[in-house]
Amino acid sequence: QVQLMESGGGLAQVGGSLNLSCVVSGSGFTTLSLGWYRQNPGEPRELVAGFMASDRPTYARSAVGRFTITRGNAKNTVYLQMTDLKPEDTAVYYCNFVGRRLGSPYDYWGQGTQVTVSS
Picture (cartoon, rainbow, N blue to C red):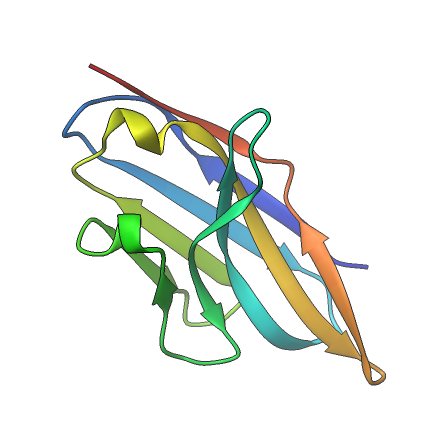
């Protein structure tokens, strides 16, 4: 079983910064992807940034130049540094882990953390 523990988020002013962390616990999986998504009510969940089957990160266009995703040395932790925040960054942010075990992929999500950017 895999568990994702998210931390960070909260309230920020426009132009401010917030940091998110996600620790993935569990064993027996080969990591396929690890990243952050966000979602607002009534809208689809969208990728913000992630390591998608690669050590090179992928970013949403809206995140380029403002957000930075990194992984911890143990590879089971992922961080999202968000700068120059805008009101449109307001959403619930979810950590996502996709791993392979015994040949099959498994998809896990964190509980979500609210990010609110106020002007």
